Image (cartoon, rainbow, N blue to C red; front, side, top):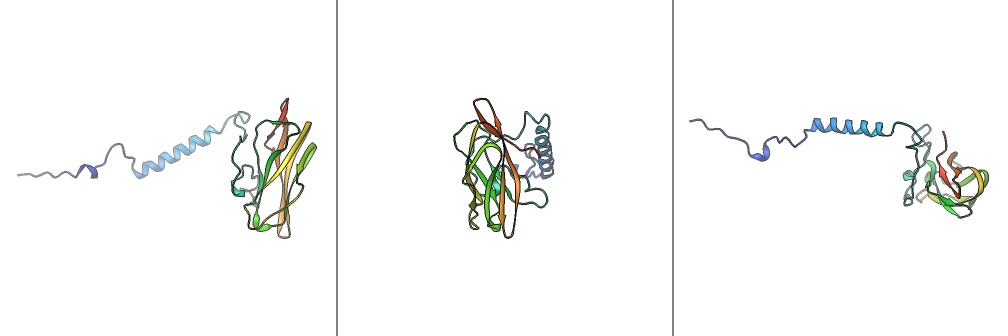
Length: 176
């Protein structure tokens, strides 16, 4: 008499389960598809952050131009590309390395752009996200730069550019 013992159903390989080596291939394909989706004409897929909650730490800011390069400094800004009225204060955040301490400022480079306050201390125990207000006058142009200075170092990097859009203005990314 031949007895055939089949494994319980739970131990059999099911066709709807992806083996672990197949999962790696799936992740690679999805990664490639995501990278390719960002390719194409830059104007339609340009970096234009919309309204969002304030970041809780500097590393979460949306415009950190030197973070992934040499020397890899944590310095940048966080802003939104939404439409703003002329003359109305708009919040923009400086994003800095807190261990450096020192002071941070947002510097208007152009005409008709005001930043308040001018200079603020960096709290070494803080989040590294420091709010400023930008006020733009009709017909203005230029950019807002972020500058951190301390005894241990610092930096000066480009931030967003002010672009008029008819009845108001909005920020656009700086060109590297």
